[in-house]
Length: 384
Ligand SMILES: *Cc1c(COP(=O)(O)O)cnc(C)c1O
Image 1 (tube, rainbow, N blue to C red):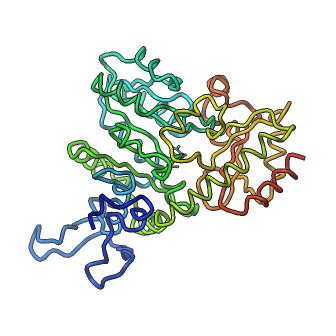
Image 2 (cartoon, helix red, strand yellow):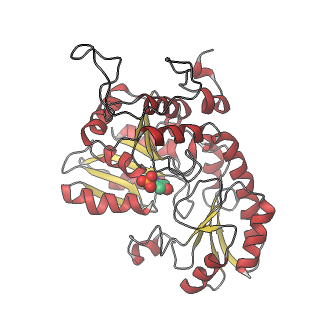
């Protein structure tokens, strides 16, 4: 059966996978090796040095390409290493237009590493895709989209941004970490590059730090592969194995993340002690219609602001939580809570942060796949 015809719930398990050639192992062995014997100089079986390629990583890269409906996957040492490779496609003087409400580490990489090499960045609200055009000039080369955004859960219309990118001959990259290909496949909506922090939902068990890129175009894949091999931030064989194992249950986990996310978002919205809940599944979410059209469900990422709450009170709530672990990161089977202003978004100046809604009392939840009743009971006791 042609693998491209498989449905998503089969692709997570079988996409790009075949039994290992040596002994028929159903899961790819962890090829923990740096180098490969050659019979004569250049006489090898497709692998010569593990920065360039490693069979366990290849298995992961094929899986990534399959689940994102792309043709080429690249696995990196972290999500930021994957982003780093994309920006290295550019030259000094080039400009990037990026989502303003963005993962803090991406913002830091753009502003504090790449600006010094002469690459310019504009951080703008993209819920109205037409606004992007105001920032396009002859130097613009790339549009960087994150949707849903972190932590405000704004949803950006990938199709409209893609039309704009094509009109001006720009690359469009989408950070698909929050949604995962279970909820949305940006390449199908016209994006050129999909990026993941596979550390989050793809790995799904909070046990690896891994990044990924997926593209359709061979020329673009070759350029990114050149950068990956030249810069060297590759995903190791053990982490490749663990991420691949995680992907095999992605669809089952995402279904439960979405169910639990809905239950908890509704609980918070009906709680008189809560001022505001940010979750794209609500009909009154400003981008609900776009979310409904480009996503298959709404996931388990939720942010909320307790009524009349301060920085200190928000910290007290996250400290009071028992089943939710107070921690950076997201997307694992266990529920996590975070305080963006002091944690993930601390590297963004307060003024910038508050412009996009990341106030001092905002709390972000990564709802896991535990029993929803237990999670709600925990929130109830912590909010008090
Ligand atoms: C975590 C994260 C990243 C960075 O990935 P790492 O694996 O931590 O390097 C990028 N984008 C988003 C949306 C993230 O959540």
